[in-house]
Image 1 (cartoon, rainbow, N blue to C red):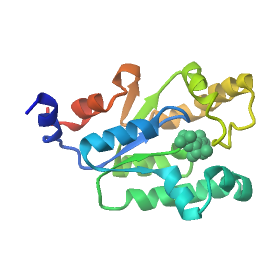
Image 2: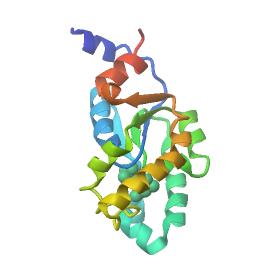
Image 3: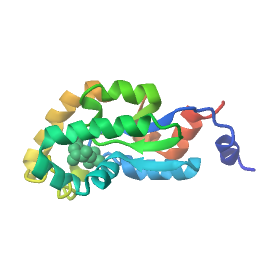
Image 4: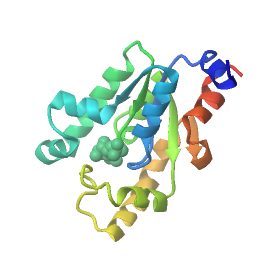
Length: 183
Ligand code: S3P
């Protein structure tokens, strides 16, 4: 048995694993990899909302507005978190910043903030605006300004996470070895 497999079999986390961070920070990609290594289910909050409402997040913003989306987002988050199962949950970029969502996340989960610079997020988002209603209409320059401003507003929520992961720490193996294993 190699060292990594041993670690996987010797985990001591009891709570759900919740990934948070700005749009474009790779929560879904990292979440899927992490869930697969831990052999537990992966849940994407936006996908769960879209499935329940039977429309895409863009359509939801367009037809019902952001306030409605935030209400549904809060309800769905509560529903998913309060189930008695182990999962990796990927949240939306705004999730921690509305209602008492961050307290809920930290009550039911071990939270990880995937922290990136505005420049990096800009490079990730410039070609991935279409599905994201908040940035769909922005030019490249406006997008950078939007990211910088929103990060100032959102960072205080994101930084309530149990762990902050930056660059070299942003791998499933690091998370498992450093934060979820009996050392
Ligand atoms: C949002 C982020 C999106 C989605 C919605 C609003 C935000 O999720 O929930 O468009 O407020 O930052 P991603 O972070 O997965 O793009």
